[in-house]
Length: 325
Image (cartoon, rainbow, N blue to C red; front, side, top):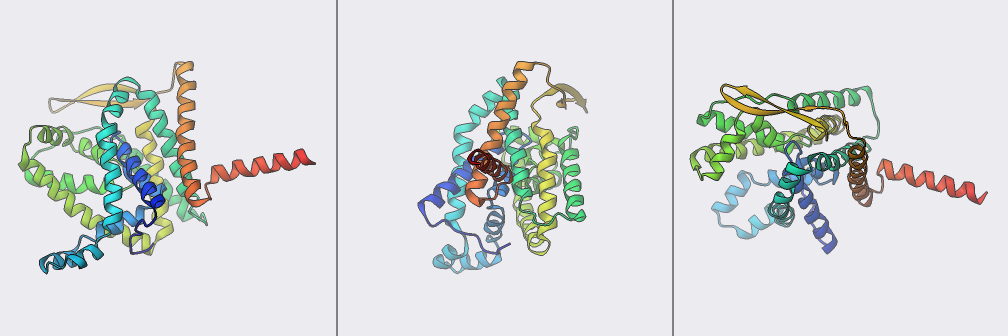
C-alpha cells in the first residue's frame, strides 16, 4: 500500500471520486452499513487512510509557522474536499429519501444494499491472488466478528464524560472499517439515542466528549490500519473482506422487529426471517441483482478484473465461438 494519497487530476477522476463520496454518504445513512465498504471496493481505502494520517504533528508545526504553502502540500486537500463534497451531498439530499424508504420500503431498500455489499465482498476478494488456508481463516474470523457485533442486543450505558469519549473512540474505529457501522456501535453501547438527542437539542458538552473520542480514535486507528495494510496486506484485506461478509446480517431484507427493555428503556431488536410473500421476494431479488450489478460494473470499470463480469464475458465469448463453428 502506498503511503501517499493519490490526488485527482483529470475531470473524470474528480467526478469519479465525488460519486464515490456520494456512495459512501448514501451507505452511511442506512443503519448497519458502512461507508468504508464503498471506499474499500472503489480502491480508495488506502488513500482515505493516508489522507486522515496527514493530520499529524508535522501539520501542526506548519500551522504554527503559518507556512500556508507547506500546509497545502502536506494535506491532500483535492482528494479530501472532493470526497467530502460527495458525502455531504448524499447526506443532505438522500437522507430524507432513505428515511422514507426505511419506513415504507425497508425490504426493497435492504435488498438493494444486500446486493451492493455482496458484490463488494466478491470484488475485493478478487484482489487476493493466492488464497491460502490462513487467508480463509482470516476471512472467517472477520466475518464472525462482524456478524456477532451486528447482532448484539443494545444496552443502556452510562453517559459520563469518559464513557462518551470511549464510545466515540470505538465508534469511529468501526466507521473506518468496511462492513461495520459506527452508528451501530453507538447503538450497542447504549449511546446512540443520547448522542442523537444531544445533536437535536444542541447539548454541546456530551458532543464535545464524543467528538474528542472520535478525533483520537481516527488518528490512532488509521495509523494502525495503514501499518497492517503495509506489513500484512493479504491477511489484513482478508479480515476486511470478512467484515464485509459478516455485515450482510445487518441488511438482510426480511427482519422481524421486537422490543426488549434494558434498564427501563425499550430498544428495537431485529431478527432475520425468511420471506413469506412470493411476489415481494421476486421483486426484492431483482432489486438485489441490480445493486449487485451496479457495484460489479463500477468495479470492472476501475480494475477490468471484476470476477463476475469477467466470468460473464468469457461465457459470452464461448457461446459466440460455438455459434461460429
